[in-house]
Image (cartoon, rainbow, N blue to C red; front, side, top):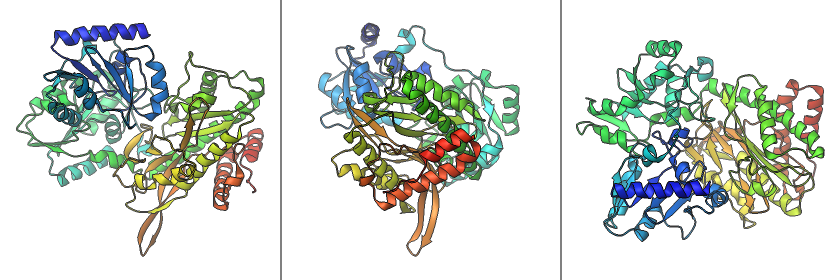
Amino acid sequence: MTTLIHKRVELLRSFLQERGLNAFIFPSTDPHQGEYIPDHWKTRTWISGFDGSAGTAVVTLRDAALWTDSRYFLAAEEQLKDTPFSLMKERIEGTPSITEWLAQILPAGSKVGIDPTVNAYGSYLSWKEELKQNQIELVLADDPAETLWEERPAAPTDTISIQPEEFCGKTVACKLSRIRKKMKDNRAESLLLSALDEIAWTLNLRGTDIHCNPVFISYLLITPEQATLFIYGSKLTPDVSAYLKENRIDIQEYSDIERFLKDFSGKSIMLDLMNTNCALVEATPSSCSIIDRPSPVALMKAIKNEAEIKGFRNAMTRDGVAMVHFLKWLEDEMPQSTITEVSLSNRLEAFRQEQSLYKDISFDTIAAYGPHAAIVHYEPTVESDIPLEHKGLLLLDSGAQYQDGTTDLTRTIALGPVSEEEMRDYTLVLKGHIALSSAIFPEGTTGTQLDICARYAMWQEGINYLHGTGHGVGSYLNVHEGPHQIRMNFVPTPLQAGMTVTDEPGIYKAGRHGIRIENTLLICADRETEFGKFLRFEPLTLCPIDKTPILVSLLDEKEINWINSYHQEVYERLSPLLDETHRDWLKEKTAPIIK
């Protein structure tokens, strides 16, 4: 593979020289600024070999580097080994930004290219200004992969389906009415949606264009009187076409959006410059004023309605049953020691497939044993696969797409004897998980303000983790959903009742072990006092937490009561759906801790 990467970089450098460019930037996104993208747009992976979900590759005529965050430091080091690329660790002291690095190595008068169809216009303006200060020009250029990538995968054209109203809770007409009110509030004559999950949510449609994410490639332009969906015509079945016509949704071919915008006669268009690609913004007529605002759909989608909340609870219950079957199977099989990380992942997916309304996994399972668990987003492959042993810790981060809800949970499991260090770290992670899950907080609180709950216990021991603590989860949509998050760096969106969010602190020690415990939570109203309204978290995930690695001496009474109460809920919800053997197993795993 490294030989192939060297060849691609050399071909790219010839391409750049022919076009008078000194460097090219490859983001990890597609035209819709997605985190997970179709293979057709994975140009950063193609040029660098690094396949993590976040990262940016930059190639100059002499140098190459790749920026990524802490989730992928270890994986990126391995994948970039013996390639032309140097690893740049984001948010680590001493690491230059992309523009700083380019300014250091390129002479004045250089030109840096980016593909306008996959780069956000807001990022383009920011980079352009930063490079201009160093007499370097950022230009919108042709996509090199279009010319150089042999056997490039085609854009997906699979058909889409209608999501039943019993799971959506609201009709398309109702959603469009709410969106149009927000447009009016912002004095916008039209709204352009690029985010695929926002389009799927608005139209109550689902697709299979992106691995693990039930969305479809499209754009949606909404005006006060009509809405136009830009989509490959081959994706529309007769039923979907009739459904769109019934809901007064016009159809245009996906590739025609730039031409359509150039001829657009509207006076104003609302879009988010940080989430709309350069090609679309550049195509908008100068006579049409751009209102740069975050999409109102993101927040609407994040606050779940009653039908969606019911769907989440039902999906989590079925997922819990699958996890009980899996965990008992794992415990029974371990003495034979024939299980590997890959076979484990496959077996877990098989258990989930037995559940009703199962559609897919919600992300590639992270089954990481021993030192592999220190790689935050490790995914086992045939090359990296190792057998499990009757000792140490297994980190298992997994989830599923059910038609009524999306699941995401992590359990760290003792496969046999564990060290004192592993037990202490496990208990610190558990304390952080409990502290966040137990939080009661006033309306208006952001996830950044609550992030310390998950980190405080480990901070007292001089330990920290660099990834976020929690993200929203879609309703049979993307497993990572905004605009709210729980993380150290500031995210301004307040947490609101009806939002889902994960609680997933962790500790990772390179070459030794990794530990994470994760539940998906629902934000609920708690009480109203003279000081205002307060919110709390309700765990949606139903799966026992391994008690074996807990150092009970480190837990206080409230923490023990939380574990016992959570396990009682797990047993009461799941036991009626289990046979006697699995019910007895679950009863043992959820038995109260006594200090």
